[in-house]
Length: 533
Image (cartoon, rainbow, N blue to C red):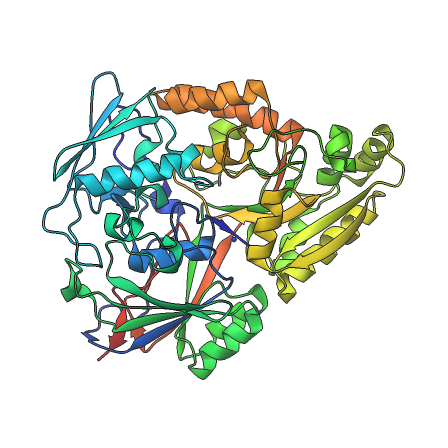
């Protein structure tokens, strides 16, 4: 999902073993008292860095939304602490036909949705059909090779594909694998206003801009493992306020501590600071063809960056990623130029031979500005947040671009508002990120393929589409590596997105709480947490 300045066994079908991620990605971390006995009851309050968008997995796209979904909406598959794909609502990994076009998924028995209705194969079919056909679904491009779903009995779902699709199981380990209550879907109301899934907690209420509350579900199959009576997700976009609230005891978990507060909290004896080297990225989305809105017919927009590849390259070369990391983030993140993180085994093969300018090349950038033929180029940079850290990022970018002759105006924007404007195409450049996926398709396809449901850039390139579709169909790691390398060459040259760094996230957890875990996907897992007795 997207966020603001935010292996699984290699099956016969060619799913990639991500065991190499184990050592490089931070292992699951809880509080120091994670071995302590947990008492039942109480409310855990988590301070979120942004406000989630719609609480409907069909259209949801924010990083923080995924944190909330972890408590409410389980998936067919999940990730373990080493980012291996493991069954969750499914009883086992898929059985795949020899031609790789049929996935048979056995489901767990005796499970109920949080409205008391049975979880079964019919619900899986209803949900996946919705993801594929619902207007505005951002899951569609993630699972588009699925042509139909059968439910031959209550505990068997059969997915038929139009072509082999290597990332499918990885997609079903995220929002595309969250199964929704058919009863709730048929109610006629907005699912996002009253989401019902299978989960340890059920939705209680939401006050926009303030909080989301979930309460322990009486229908959850593993309710004996659920200790808390409720979880409150407070929307706290100011990072300093989040840290102050944690130290004061007003919240028990802080989402993504700002870099300047990390040393302070590390010295606080009442708090544990957990760290996760993530598989996500943060960067800039450039509007090249999103003139009419997301997934509308794309055509070149009337902006300086869209008109000239020379200028886009100059814009990139003016950015000193090392300095950005140091000045804005205290040197705590990992500067880079690519959507796949260095902790991934896909990184080296896909980026081999491609140059990443961790330091600015001002002289060359100036020459390219001149070569663009655009006098006094200007860019409006929309920031996906109004907090001080994001503001500082905008100021640093503004200063670096001024040094090469590009005038940048900065527009701080509330996060969900910024997402809506990005979808509508009413922006030049957008400071935005992605929380990352274990399969590279999840970090690339949706953003730069013509049919990608996150392609706010409006970028379209027939050759790139052909390559990315080929990578989806390819069944060997070697061939997929070759294709992703070819894809990265195009993306790196055309620059519909400019990648700046991979986040290293820090989280604050009061020592009164035990069982909170942070995996390499950067999500806060608190559904089985509680207060130490």
